[in-house]
Length: 448
Image (cartoon, rainbow, N blue to C red; front, top):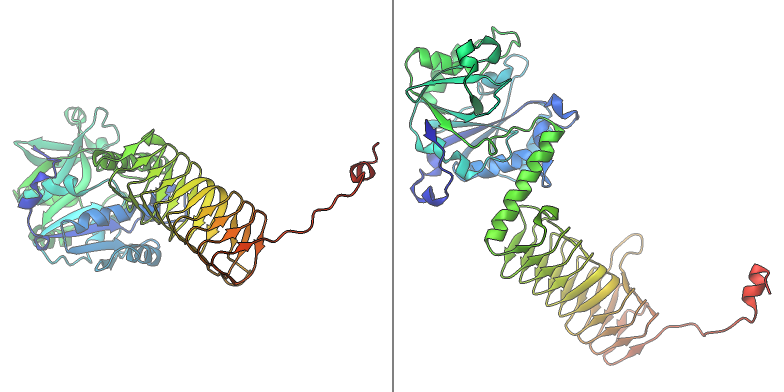
């Protein structure tokens, strides 16, 4: 039996992308998910599970077809949000249900055709190498289970697949087999053209099964090779429990990759990470952080409980318990606890605690005091606040946009600043006169 080689080192010897076509089956409803949403659109690490399969497929092929059926428009739209040049083929589920029926409308361009399932999000480039390197007529993925109960058994003799037998049809000897079908196949285009038209639906489910091609080809002495694969990579997701398990495995994979590149992650099992996050240089991520979107972190320290969304963080420390919202750019800056930044550029700034900075440009040497907020929204439109260099913004100040504060300005604590422009070197102060009302406490509460 061929063993799948997991190393990435052989990529230089791989065929070109024009040597193989890939078909991804994504027409099913997924009733066990207990959801109105199509199964392949359920999210893992904030991406639909089919995203990861297409991403892996694009590493080895330029000819990718996705077979759609249930909620076909939504599936096509979601995939198109991430990928271009995907061929969408609608399955005629009414007349040709089943995995064999799904391939009837596909027209692969290349001689080898790899058939993947849209509910196997843990497939990656390395797990597909063995299908490319083998030239058999059919390559059938298999794995061994300690308890194969419920699975069809794969009968192998002299390193060739003889048949796939369902458990209910297996003999006593066949039930002792632990090798089962993993559900991914590579066919020569010739095999598909010859045997797809011969499939029938003479079975209890009245479906056309792709596995029937195995028996048809075997009867005519075609070469059918088993490929032993890693069960984890080929795990199908059919329920919310399996979805959660796949999420954990995906998170583990992502974090282990970046730790191997030198990122320090404290209690990594508590950290959430998406595959679009990129690290450069020396980075430390403390526990309970969430990093998402197209985020770049370079030479930065993200402290416990912080959330970073689609932002660039360079040579800065963030948190603990800070929230950096999308389209923020933070360089050489200290962001402390309970500070929220949204769509802002901060360079060389200190914002220690309890602040909201939205739609702002803040330059080097500026200090943002506790409780400072930019009032960037008037209920209809959002406006920008520009703050120059070496500005001291006192605690509990409100900066009402649109507003421009030039260099070397002091904003007194408790100031509400509504002027459109504050000149260089100024002090801005806005406070009501302090007064005392004698014995007011006793009058209010009726006490003496």
